Image (cartoon, rainbow over all chains, first blue to last red; front, side):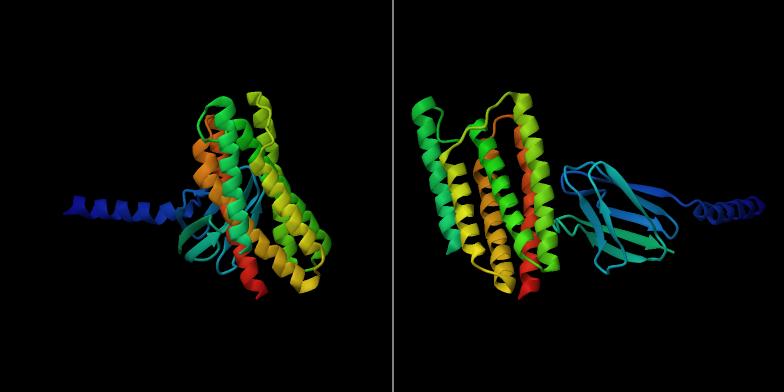
Length: 104
Length: 178
């Protein structure tokens, strides 16, 4: 019983500590595609797009909350400030699409 | 109608090119890598010339942004293609398909030169939709399947994805102009 309580307490403290470290999530742009296409993140995390493709691309939110240009062989990043579901695409090549799920 | 004419000219030129190739080299009806490289490069050059005309004539923000992207993207792909043919020691070969493309788009620009304002913007973007559709169709069904060098095939495949993006971008601009 006591051992069980300690285990629960330990698990709780781990759960409380873990979200404090904001992460950087890398997305590679190559051959006219975002990889990975779907991302799960938390508020405070940073997405870093690395464009290794031949041409410039954008990461443009459908709801216009972000619009980032990434030149070939360059990186650009975005720190996530609010929770929500964000569909994004490349303005120059709308056949390129991605999704970011941001939890609080 | 315009698209059908261009597509027919394209298909006919590919067949003619193929037949000439079969007679001279007995290698079937497929264009060879030197011809494919020339066709893809010429298609890019024609679109760069179309975009240069649009940058001179259009004042529409979206049309100009599209044209500017055509200039940088097609130059980037063509530079990569030039570097590749140099590396592979392939000399791009002029052929009936590349001649048909260059002439077809030069004729389009001659028609567009007589237009201005909204009429020019609409005609330019409509031609970009039709032209990308035709070239993308040719890449998908004839040029990519015929390419024998793996690096050339890979560049054409990436090019196709970029150009399919251009087609969607042009369709979006066309819908905004209505």
